[in-house]
Image (cartoon, rainbow, N blue to C red):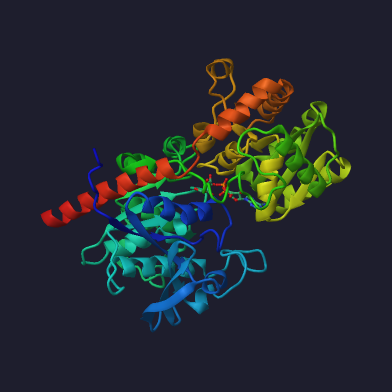
Length: 495
Ligand code: ADP
Ligand code: GLC
């Protein structure tokens, strides 16, 4: 029997990053991959992004579709266009976005001083599109990602026109977008919005708080993180609000773009492979060792890391475990960038242990692929992790993930305990988050499992057989979108 036809839905996504144009982390990966997966579920997505130079330069078939004489202090336009299969709307506002490099941080390493205005403008433009400012296209639902877009439901709330359904996704509760209350007028928010059930947050204006308060639904990027953030320990000041909105809060795991992350056809690796393949692994490991100047020691386990270097990611714990690495003949291949202190500490460790610690401190998309293909195990020792993508890439590349048991890491990796090994379902190793002693223990376990070649191969095979695609997550999002669109339409009929 054929499936009943579902009505096509139109969604506007709003975000401050999108792969392959602008990326500082997994947010960009998600925003870049979800539209393609949603299209297969009958959801048509257009994505509104700031018109940074990296966006404006790449936009194909660019066509101005709306003009603002003044938007927060300067002329601006909405420009529709495409990049590959992505259907984009760029907010071309040179006074806000015509700045190269990192989307949030200026050349002095500090946040741009006008970030509140820059991202209020993004949300404002999103609200305008939501209310039908584009000729011939009006979304049924708006999906705002992270604090940079989260003021959008506030702009829709304090006006009278019928509005589409709204979803806000929390990719990381650590970034909330909090600004002084005296900016209310400058942000274009009405006085009545400064209330406990509006944008007010501990006496200031909270962008993410506003979104969490006012969106029809909240999603976050794993079921475990959805639970964790309702507790004071992980709620970062927003747990009370999240508990109050628990019925509207959904945890939907991320996937990875299996065309971008595909060991069968990856231009950035030394040898392609489709299943655990010792020869291909060896070639990729050799290429990685050569790139990071690691010794050619056939017995050593290569432990990969691809990460921002920040407190969240727990890599300071790894620095405490260096003696264990050397005892267990584990080599470290680390690709990371971030906190100056951590970078300096890893640089010092590498220069004391040449050939055993290989580093690239910086951002390198291609090297990220070679690390995944060339390492034996991939470490993600986060203190908290909303979802995490690198462990999913690792599964796909036959690198065995060693992860902290937290957030999306806990939800995506099956620990190689006796029962899971016996049942043939183990894919990696988990350890209690935030503890160097537990991490050291996990590294010893990983080294022992690695010496047991058939067991290690089974872990790799189970990992490579795991579905890390966007198919299942996109189905969840599409079902949620449709439920929200229906509820919004019936609310409108009642009102
Ligand atoms: P987060 O978004 O918290 O940084 P995720 O695991 O969700 O963590 O996403 C990180 C993304 O950024 C992955 O696609 C990963 O490959 C990539 N990445 C992280 N650090 C680097 C780096 N130094 N160079 C290249 N890619 C990186
Ligand atoms: C955030 C989180 C990360 C998540 C990513 C994409 O950056 O830190 O865990 O995978 O967003 O949702």
